[in-house]
Length: 258
Image 1: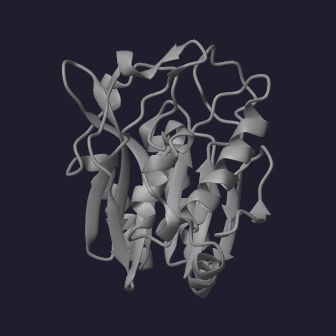
Image 2: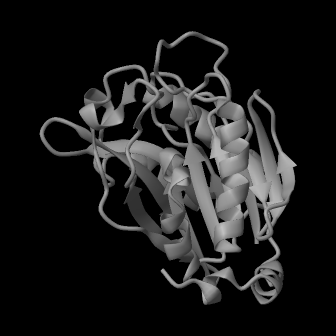
Image 3: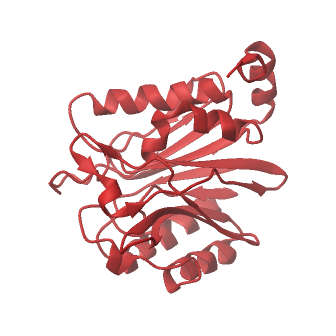
C-alpha cells in the first residue's frame, strides 16, 4: 500500500488550509498514493479559539475534503475540530474518500508542559480503525503516542497505524518524539506513519504548533524515511509482509500477559 505523509504548516484560516490540502492531495495522487495523510489540526492551527472553526463531519469543510479525495480516488486522513461538550470541541481525525467518511476523537488530551488541551477539547472514548483495500488501519493523535496500550489495542487488528500530530517545541521534545514514534512501532510490531505539522518558524506562544520530523517507521522500529522541519511530502510503499515477519521474530503481542 502506498501512503503519502503531507507535512504542512496550518494557518488559522480553514479555507486557506483546504487549498493546501487540495494541492497536496493532487500531488500525492499523481505519485500513486492510495492514502494521503495530513497532521493533527490540518483544518486550523492551535493557538486560536477553536470553537468558531469546529464543524460536524457532515459540515462544509469535511465535505470539501471528501470531494477532493473522491476527485483523486484516494482516502484522505486529516486533523480537524468538531463540536464537543460544554462549549468545547473534539480533536477529530477525519477519514474520508473511497466510500469512507468517519472520525476518530483524540482519547488522550495534552495536559502537559504547561498546556491544557482539556480546557477547550473533550476527549474521545474509543479507538478507531478503518479498512482500505482489505487492510485495517488504526488511528492515533499526537499525545496518544505516549500511551503504548492504545497502540497495542490497535495492533490487534491493524498492521498500519497513522499518527497525526502538532507536536510542541521545547528542550528535548524532538528527541522524545523520535523515540516515542519508534517505540510505539516496536510495541505494536506494526508500521507507524507519523505525520506532524511543519515547524511554523513563528512564535504562537505556548500552543503546540509543530516541529516537523514526520516519519515512516517499520514494525521493528527502524526509520525508513523522515522529513526535517520544513513542509514536505513523503510517499512510501508499506510492505505488509514485514508485519507478519516481525511478529514471527518478535511476538510481543502474543507473549503479553497484561
